[in-house]
Length: 111
Image 1 (cartoon, rainbow, N blue to C red):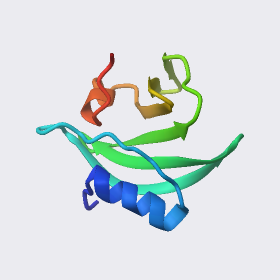
Image 2: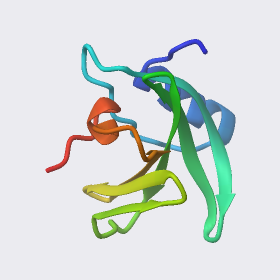
Image 3: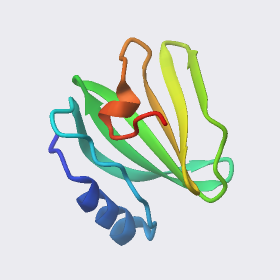
Image 4: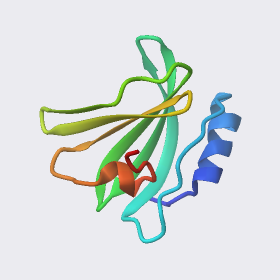
């Protein structure tokens, strides 16, 4: 895994997939490393998907633009998902349930 910056990832989203995606920057000293970006198909079309490693564990950050979603925090099947909205952008962080503080590690502190 070769870490990339949020700015480099945003350029990659635009150049490779034609997506304008605003990613948070992990705070200094964070155990999160942004390693890759891709687009994924879901029920409504294509979605931006950023891949991180947090404490060596794989973490996904899905980014939806448009209507904000209600905050949610769900745990099932050994995974934890947290929905966080910032303005018109909704972020969904999916990580192993045993990891804590993942949203903050990738730069999405709770409001």
